[in-house]
Length: 252
Ligand SMILES: [Zn+2]
Image: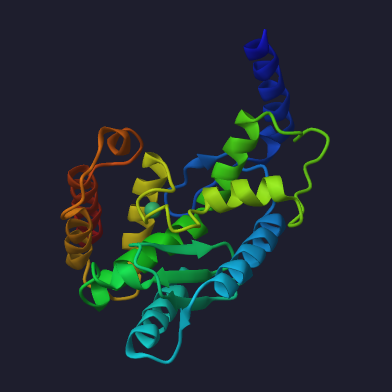
């Protein structure tokens, strides 16, 4: 009975939103997104401010300048008029980085141990920016709204004050140090971010082969569990996919 109720709700919701499907940039994949860009930007802004006040932001060092320089180079080719780009390096051992809607990029110092040169750092920054461009967070929030049968029908307006949404949002965007760079998104979104990320790197003039090295470094010493495999491409699959994307670009 419960399942039936859920599927009816699902159908109603789908029929309401069927007129506004979205397409992912570069890959043209159809997406179901139930929150508007404005709502997404507002949530992104408030999560970003919170992250910065709760963290140790590193400023005016060689590393923080490098994050900024590389980030700005990729932002330029990402070509997003509505984005207000910012790039921050935060003191945190986790191998993590994320880009919030609107172009707020945060890199943790932990990832600098894995990204051994500028091209490799460009790999992870491009990958995170790709998640934002493709609105993967909004897609995950939408999926989670549907699965929770949230009151999408009566109250579609998300407010930044609504804690139940900001929690979903933070998880969907991979915030919080318990989620590594590999953790927050599903398999399909990960490959899509890899693909878009490689295009961005290419446009910005970085060495694409270093992307392969970056993901090799990421997987080194990491015990990839069965659970991890079930939702994420394992590093071998990921590296093979990236090789194919690079080939495609080079044959153009
Ligand atoms: Zn990712």
